Image (cartoon, rainbow, N blue to C red; front, top):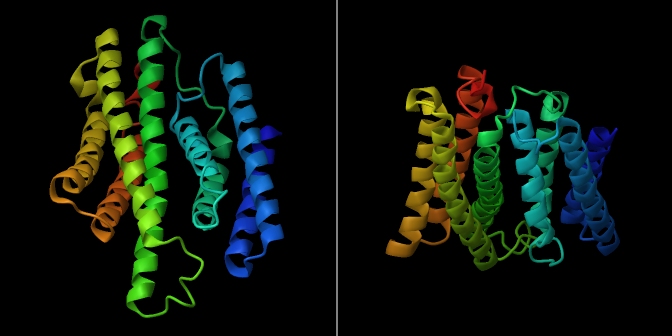
Length: 271
């Protein structure tokens, strides 16, 4: 019941924000904001309900991890819906979030294994940290896509028409940089906690190599973006392109590794 309510509210909020992008109607915007807040609240209630049934935080399967990432990203976007300069970002984020929620909904109740008490703390901290970093990268990805679209429109000389409702490039760059930096820190911490989790179980590197290698590739791409920002002063489209490539690579690795090596990480390793 709650899962269906979450999906319906995501759909309604998507329709509202997309409608606002084209109509600029303030009443429609307020309705869309209300639906989105209800969506996040209902999503939280669903996560709590699922966790109570499983007796742990529901992050033990790829579907549950994706569900948590969408929720974390939605929470970040709450701070962006109140300013007209950034609220239109929702019309780009919500359709993707809605598709993700609808796609994973049938698998959210699947429990791939059991927790060992000695490793529960490390596994939970590792997974929540990584998912939080991925959620911030998702926000950075949306900002980077909108940045590239806006910049392209400006170069074509259509700024007074097609780009009139999009956030200024300076604001998009600030959102992109903030989320990229915070996400990189969260991912780095998550990787350290992941090593502690594997050590607490006595797992060999070979048993977690597929996920660890995919994570290392993703970390390197985002590290490059952060480094170039600090050391070289890259801004705007260069950072946006690196972020878009990094996030796309993250999704490909997430799907590919979980399909090819379903037991290569997480509590699925535990017999």
